[in-house]
Length: 347
Ligand code: 5MM
Image 1 (cartoon, protein in one colour):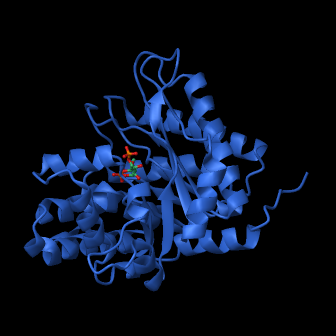
Image 2: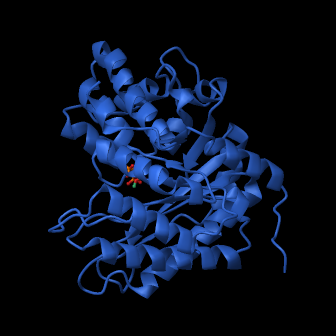
């Protein structure tokens, strides 16, 4: 059987190409209210809708951000918000030539009969929600699955299969409704596992994801994979260096991700901001000529953190906070072409 083509195939392919245009990546600002509030409270910002709106305005209106950021993933609350002047965030992005994205999953919930594991929910009513978001102006979506590594047999096959199946069902629905699905199966960095364990788990989980996408007739050219890097656990004794992370990540992706895919982007997953740039950069410097798909970033914390910490909810700090966000976006844009250097950080 040849590849199934959804009705909006050409549009999906054009959208996917715009999302991973050369030198650009995707900004993730789709934190649910709970996550956003937690990050606000950690730096002393009031966890209110007003502050969340102000913060998202700060990021989305950062001067020149569109040079390095092709689009942003919004949360349901954010996609309905506007700037203080009354311009909708959707229009802010569209006027800058950016693609509007929306997180559509309903969060990772405990997987029954699988202690310590989660499955992402949100398929019920998804067709209708996609229709609404498309009509509002969204052109891509995101769904995140969470895979935990533990020395007690986690992840189990049951967890890997349940999450991959849901990702594929979500992706097919998105394409039916004209949204490019970002599929995000995140292998968490939490734990003291070594990089070889992360590599084995990432390989198993990506194989299953592409197996399920095939069976759900998902058109790969209109899909973006958002993946974690192959990296040592945060608490590992001897954490692998930049070159090993770059080599193992690229090798794992080459073994598992079909060449037809629209693009691959990374989450930062708790890495430091400079580390996230260095890893992406090393992948391009060492393997740039072997990559069959665009390979770039879709960071949340690794772009936002310096800006959030400086802003602290103060109107007088907006301009400098925006400069800090732009710096990370620019360095990651350079890293996506192998043109970043850690020396630039102090310049
Ligand atoms: C893993 O999280 C995604 C990427 O962010 P980092 O670069 O910080 O790792 C991110 O898009 C995530 O899905 C959102 O922040 C939403 O998180 P919650 O937990 O609120 O759904």
